[in-house]
Image 1 (spheres, rainbow, N blue to C red):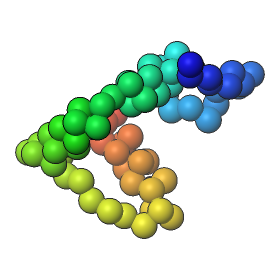
Image 2: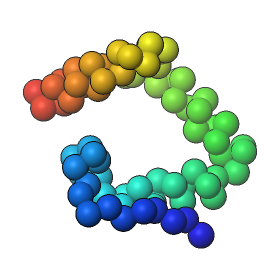
Image 3: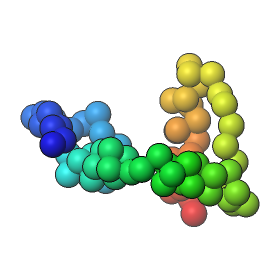
Image 4: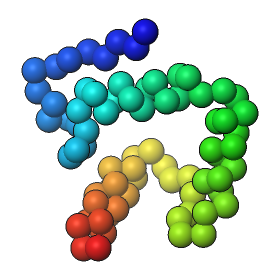
Length: 74
């Protein structure tokens, strides 16, 4: 059973996210087999429209902000 703490304020969640969406994402990954997880990872590396890269943790908020700005323009 997946337990998600319900908070009075969901201000820390990204737009469009709520406890139900979090439960669904957690359930997806907790119920996934190892083979399914590997296939999902491999598919991500094969995508031609996105790039996976490592960035320093301290830059993550800035990168997220840039992505959000890009998404609002498209």
